[in-house]
Image (cartoon, rainbow over all chains, first blue to last red; front, side):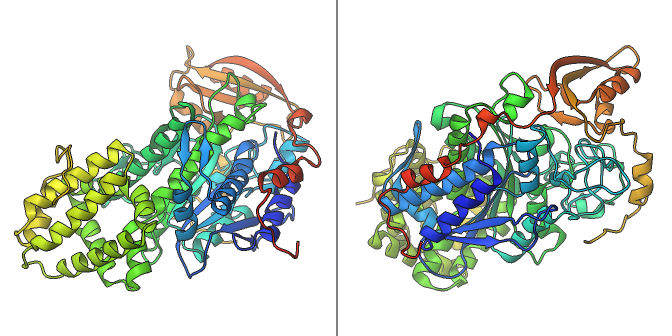
Length: 492
Length: 121
């Protein structure tokens, strides 16, 4: 069953009215082309200022009906879990109540369930395969702009499935961000802290990451979209062009994407594929690429990891694939994937550091090591990937225990200070404390994968005891965690 | 509304006029779901992308389109082989797929049962 725009708005209004401690409903600055209000929800538990943020957008393509419902239903699942202290169970995947608590108490979730209300209404009342918004295109008999071609990244470059023809279903619009519906998304990205983003579409069971216009490469940093013309209504015009991405970013897209895929597979075995957007077909001006591209086009802007979900399988024909008679199971898969994205968006070090230390210096030092040292070598990136794999679940464990949290914070402070004295030796007592913390985490972990990862960290730590900080970092940059250890022995 | 300058290319209006887009009626009353294949006179399937059609994912990785009769005819006239798989009359969403009146509130009431609500509501 699919809810009308009015029903979705009714639900978000009720959630904000009934549970203001969790939900704030925001009317976005721009009504739709036909004048409908467009609403977003902020969801969080607890107080405090700005937090890391996740933005989920649904209903961009009007006929992909199930995702607006899934996003609202996910918010209710989160509310119930947090309020009652109960796990969220999606088939074979259980999201422990403590994990949900950490998500809601450490992130701001920005939910824009129905970004294209005119299109949804048109699908429900006139044409159930309508894709675009309901813009009247002047001087043509054709209506609508494809909102997922209208963003300001290579806008109007008609590579692959993008068109400058108003009658096309992939019409990019008369200018970048010409549509109020896309400007609303831009507004959220401009005014809120958004670290992770997903534009949730259907169908074909894909988790897509940038880029859409060209294959991704990590070698030639001169190949940037910022150097390409836009608004040309022509293809890229450079045969063989490949777009640059920082190796660490590509790895993060792939690592987090795999976590999303795994979380979906655990529900009932659906095998989503994590791949670059161009693997579906070439596109420009999409939400996912735009979210990620912004910090490249304007280095003053925050980096946002932008994904596109394509929920649901092919079921024999396009109509039923876009809106199957019963989307319940597909929505359950999608919600598990969205939860995985949220969990992966938590930065454990930043969280523990800011919550317990109340200052940035040590966390910044660790971030610099990640970005400027580890991120530049293959082995270093393997360490980053390892940390990103385990941190979401470990953060829940650490933050659920006051003593572990305190110890974690003290170690972040100590290690952060050490990193500023590269000639100093890595002290044995610090290594011992880290090993001890790792040992506790291993004992509390129910994940074999987490235990193996923690063992690899422990093994490496033993190797660098007594060497200088600079040498220890060099070792990490050139020797990855593979084969680092399988059986963790807690010291003492 | 911000109109981006066109850097190194045609003005958008000029370029749009030169687009090789296939004709499409403003309000079709019928679409077809179809796959497109190389024909005797047209072997380059990549060129189908230049025709601005509504491509949807294909389970075999091929080119699957939702298109009008005019669109299908134009593809054939350009030498492609078009296999029509399904006739899709333009119609509203099946009434049976709508969440019922009252179902939305009932669903939320059931889901949040027992959780304290804000008094003012």
